[in-house]
Length: 288
Image (tube, rainbow, N blue to C red; front, side, top):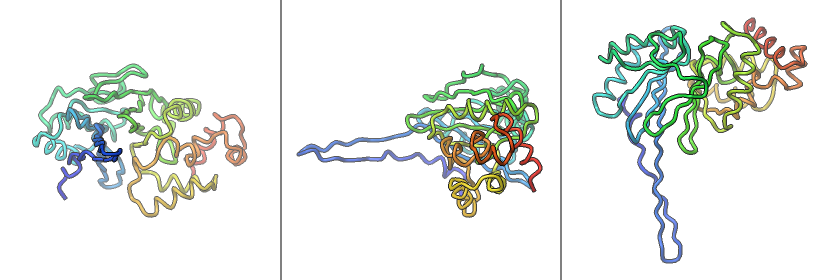
């Protein structure tokens, strides 16, 4: 399969409506294009994401931790004039997200390629303030600080008209969340149920790992609602789930975003949302 098939330009959709003797033709185009790049070598289950502004061809690569998987795709896209790579973007400093930064620069012959991310990311050159970000062609990409998994965790939100997406790294997964390696339950509660929950419900979620199937197994052990059962059915028939679900979906099938659900309060024996979050994470860490 040609790795560049995904970069084929979306052809304008032509819609016609007959108004008496007049025909109105409307062309619809979209600027934002997201390509998932699975980096599933050995036991790894990470995703890198290529975000492209189709109108300008400007692009960034999110968390290209395995250059051997990512660099050939980027090289071909650049050589064929299909993208203008403007930066590497990281969601946090862990090696399986930011550890490929230097090698990507080397492989592409771009030693000064900007690296946008948290302060501890490999060779980072730019760390926007919380709520700020950068321009990608005609797109505005906004960084949302979500400290907990790491203290430099940033989720990146982008909108193109009605299309909205957020790259959540190891903060938010489909039906799950990251471990609290450098933070607290209160920080994760803020990250999920205040910062990310405030995004439009139709925002598509692009997490850093393919953990959905195992997350669903845990979720069903503590809550059996229809949304979780529906997600379970989806995982049985789909190996990849990234970008298939939204913030609104997560509010229904992600137990870590349902910390005020009476059923989860009963299961955890807690009523305070932060304490529910802490207990759920402890239970998930010990779940077999």
